[in-house]
Amino acid sequence: MKLLHTADWHLGKTLKGQNLLDDQKYILDEIFEVIDDQKPDAILICGDIYDRGVPPIDAVDLFNETLTKLAERNLPTLIIAGNHDSATRLNFGSELFARQNIFIAAKITDTPAQIVLNDKFGEIYFSMIPFFEPGEIKSKFFSEDAERLTYNDANKFYVDLARQKISANKRSVALAHVFLTGGVESDSERKIVGTLSNVNANIFSRYNYIALGHLHKPQKFYSGSPLKYSFDEANHKKSVTIVDIDGVGNVKTEKFELTPRRDVKVVTGTFNELIKRKPIQDYVQIILTDDVYIYETEKLRDAFPNFLEVKRENHLKSYDDASPSSFSKEDSISEQFANFFKDVMQEPMTNDEQAALEEILREVEREER
Ligand SMILES: [Mn+2]
Image 1 (cartoon, helix red, strand yellow):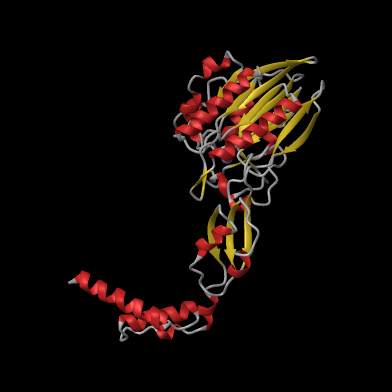
Image 2 (tube, protein in one colour):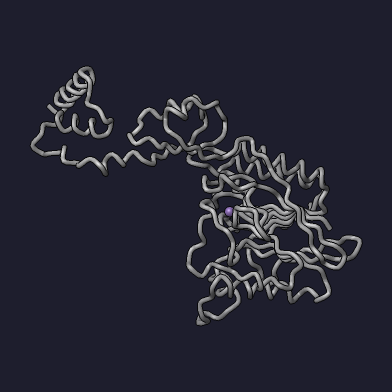
C-alpha cells in the first residue's frame, strides 16, 4: 500500500504580517501533482491543519476546497488534530465526511478511532491519535485522585489502547501529533507547554510506521510542513513523504520535494551592497551588517520587494567604542539631539538639518502653548 504523508499545513498562517494563503494554495496544488503522479492509496494529514483554533475564513474555504478535491479522487484521507487546531471545530461534520472516506479524528474517544484499509495482501490498521493534553486522558480514563500524567504516559496509554485492538499479525500505522524525543525543532512550532512534552518512539514500537506531525523539518517519521514558516527554516528542503508498505509490513519511504511560489530566505550584507542586488520576489529577512544605523530600509524594496524584516547586526558597535558622554541634562534639547544624531550617523548635522530641527522644535513649542 502506498500512502502520502503530510502534516503541519497551518492554513491561515501569517509570517511577520505577510498572509501566506496564496502560497498555501500554490503548495497544495503541488501536493495534488504528487498525488496525481504517484497515485497513493490514501492520504495522511497529521495535525495542525489550521494555524489557529479560530482560523480566518479564507483558510476554512481553502481546506473545504481541498477536502472536496480529495473526495473527488475518492482517496481515503485520514486527518488528526494538532496542537494548533481546535478539536471541536475540526471535528465538525466528521461523521458525515466519513461517508466520503474523509476520516477526521480530532478528539479522544473511549475507543481510539481506527480505520482499516485493504490492499491485495489484506488489511492495514490505522490508529488515529489526535493531539491532546495529558489532563484530558486523566479525566476521561482515570479517577480524580490519580497521579498527574506526562505527555509520554498519556500517549502511551492511548496508543496501547489503540494497538491492543489490533491482532499481532496485522500491519498497522499510527498517526500522531507529538514531539518525539530526539527530534529537531524549529521556531514556528509553538512549543508544547511543560518540560515533559517529549514522547518516546518506543511507545509506537508495535506499529509498522508512525506518521507524525508537529516538527516542521522533514525527518524520520515526520513529513514536515509543506512551507517554511519561520526564518530559521530557511535551509530546510520541504517535502511530502510517500510511504510504501509491503505485504509483510516492511516500509520504504521517499521524500518528494516541494517548490514554493516564493522561498523564505535570509540575506546578509551592507545596505550599499544589498540595494544593488538583482531583484528577487522571495520572502526575505535582511540582516544589515553596517556599523551605523540605517534608516532608509524601504529603499531595499527595489531589490527585495517582499522583504518581511530587517535586522541590524553591527550598528551598536560604534556605541560600544564611543563613550556615551555626549549626553548631558544641562544641554538644550537641540544640543542633545545634535549629539545623538552625530553618535548614530557618525557625522554632524548639516546646516539644513539643523534648520529643520529648529523648525520642528518651534512647532512643538507652539503646540504645547
Ligand atoms: Mn505545526
